[in-house]
Image 1: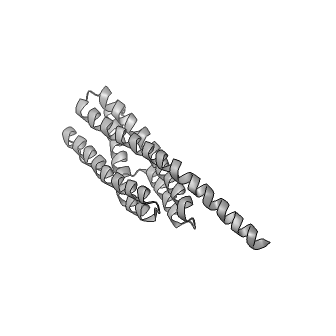
Image 2: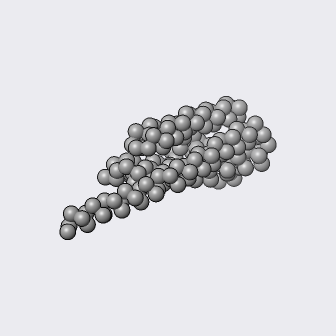
Image 3: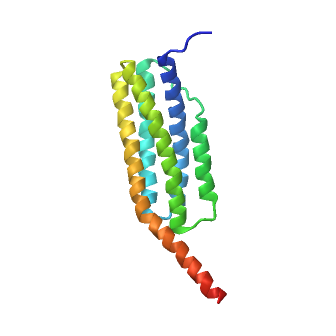
Length: 176
């Protein structure tokens, strides 16, 4: 049994993140299509472009290391994407659906923030300063996206609350 080095862990984690980004490239258009809020839809579309850039940065890092841009199946992201697909398929409508989409998207962002924080630290420890800089740029963008989602939720969640209150009020009036 050979001892695993930090460089090997780093490469494995990059491959995992590379797969995660590629899964998101496929999932984000579906989330954008399901969003009812124009701002949320636009946010998903903008993040799709960023996500393509994130995958490109990982490819650049692999190239600088002389590594193939092989992917390692990211089961964590697969689970998060599956949960997002469930939200899309749910019978939710309007702001309630958008609130659920935001919750699913924020889970993804938090997962990515954890992953990029780790690989950036690995790159720093390994003296991969250019890679660390690229990974920090991606980490900053993921945090920014999470912040934008929080801001959108502060607008959408009250509307979802009002929508459910209005439906309950309507049902109560019909029952009388």
